[in-house]
Amino acid sequence: MADGAGRKHRDDISIVLCGQAGQGVQTVEYLLTRLLTLAGYHVFATKEYMSRVRGGVNSTTIRVSDHEVAAYVHRIDVLIPLSKGAVEHVAQRVSAQTVALGEREAVGDGPVARSCKFIEIPFTKMATDIGNKIYSNIVAVGAVAALLGIDLERLTDHVRRSFARKPAEVVEDNAKAALAGYEAAGGLGIRDLALSPAPGDRGKGRLLLDGAEAVSLGAIAGGCNFVSSYPMSPSTPVLTFLAQHGSDFGIVVEQAEDEIAAINMAIGAWYAGARGLVTTSGGGFALMTEGLSLAGMLETPVVVHLAQRPGPATGLPTRTEQGDLELALYAGHGEFPRIILAPGTLEGGFHLAQRAFNLADKYQVPVFLLTDQYFIDSYYDTPAFDLSKVGVEKHFVRTAKDYRRYAITREGVSPRGVPGYGDGFVIVDSDEHDEEGHITEDLDLRVRMVNKRLAKGELLAADVVPPALVGPQDYKNLVLCWGSTYHAVKEAISQLGRDDTAMLHYSQVYPLYDGTADYMARAGKTVIIEGNATGQFAKLVELHAGIPADELLLKYNGLNFSVEEIMAGLGELLKDD
Image (cartoon, rainbow, N blue to C red; front, top):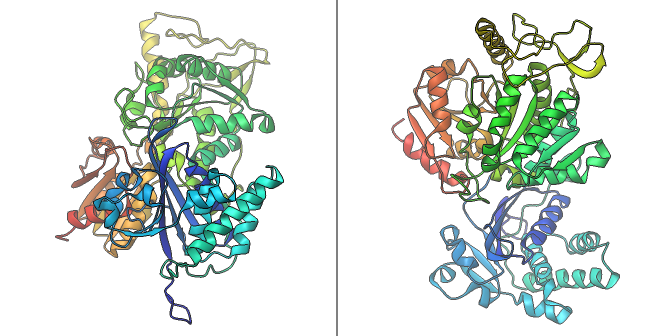
């Protein structure tokens, strides 16, 4: 697009900030994304970072566009390297079209640096002249704002508001730093990075939040009033958010001494009538599996937010992977039903987290919410969530004197009582038990109790969130995916421009939607995309739908899929169609 003066405008720009942990990369990200949103643009941001408090090299990618964007792209249009080694860290993403902005010392003079367009702006010297080199990041914010064509007054007002709680001198120095960067970049005469004008104020009625906030808000909407967890990345932001807002929503938050204690506390909370959550990652959940079986035997509801990261063991603790589906599916000794949800959008993160509490309460089973580091740490602007159908559904009963906690019913769900609510005793036991809840070794009764618990499976299968079909109904090719891959797969198929290919995204992976086989049978070729090495969802689909996928597209290096990767992969797999 070009304006009246013939200057080209861009409708989608990818900006990468790269530097050491502790350099304030997240401050720049925060200021830029909010500034661009206030200017009426759509933004998406995600990050990759090393497992260390200071040092190393981390990067943040920000997409800004005049249309909705919610997926990671490989390309870099503007690179802001803030430390030595930054350019080499993102070398595979740098091209001749990349504009690197900053100091020669940070960019270096290696082959990667020479392959892009380098524009020197002495961030540190400019910041030091203002009063402190710490302002160099704000100089960078001003420079990027100028390149993108953001109004100067909007920039300085935004910076002043962002630092309003600081002393007046600090506020003004930050504004001066933003102005200095703006003037330096504005004087370079670079026109091909200016954004297309934003059509109106897009910020109204939209939310800018990340996956952790979406899940946390969904838990609150689901009536969560007890959280017990031991911190473990990438799940910790959910614990942190609920702790920060616990007093506002009546939530008891307990940082337990370990994960074993955490899940047992949550089970106890549900037994007492609360609605409890544990939030953890794979290594932490591994310690919870005995507690999970306890919930299965007690038929006590529990909600487990499992934020995936690469394993085994500590693996890559700050990276992403969809590697724990089978862990959630088969965890625990013995046989008992469960539900596994896996949101692909922020809206889905909110509504599925809310739904998880109602499902756990209704069917008295563990409910998993599977996310991953990419989902938790990524954010974009999204329409405000529809709250019209959000509600807390409580299913416990007032007990009578002859109350039996494990009364055998045809559908497997016994009336759940809460101690002190009614006249009956609420007896539970981790051993096999009779209908009242007392321990038993009656082997015939054992069979009836197992059958009662497993009978819930039919109810769960009838209450499944159906997969979302995106694309033509009369597709020739069908791409199946689950969880956090939603937006990248959707955009990749759209960019390929194939009107014969549709996406089928699963936000509930277990019980599997019983119409999956019908969807697959209608396709000439099926492809499953997921972020693990063994095709865990593909195996689940084949096991329960009875049809293997024709092709798999897998990634397991610790990074999420880019739009371009999926385009290239699908282009190769579907090239004969």
